[in-house]
Image 1 (cartoon, rainbow, N blue to C red):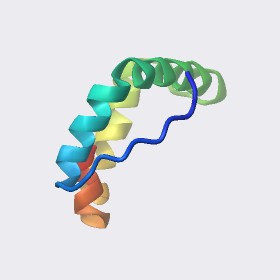
Image 2 (tube, rainbow, N blue to C red):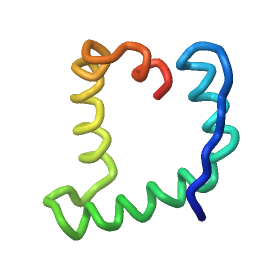
Image 3 (cartoon, one colour):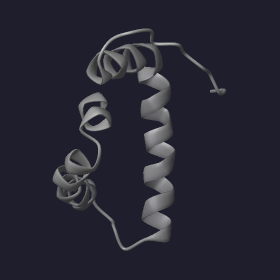
Length: 73
C-alpha cells in the first residue's frame, strides 16, 4: 500500500467519500487493521465494541465541527 492522491472532482463531501471508499476500500481496511492492532497495544481499549462506542461518542461533536467532512465520513 503506497500513498495515492486522487482528485474526486466536483460534488458533495458524501460523493467524495463514496469515490474514495470505492478506490481505497481494501487498503483502508488494511490500514484500519494495523491501527486497531497498535491501539490495542498502546491503550486500554481491548474489544471492537469498546472502540465503536468511543467512535460513536465523537460523531455528534464531529458533525457540529464540520458537517461536510462528517458527511464524507
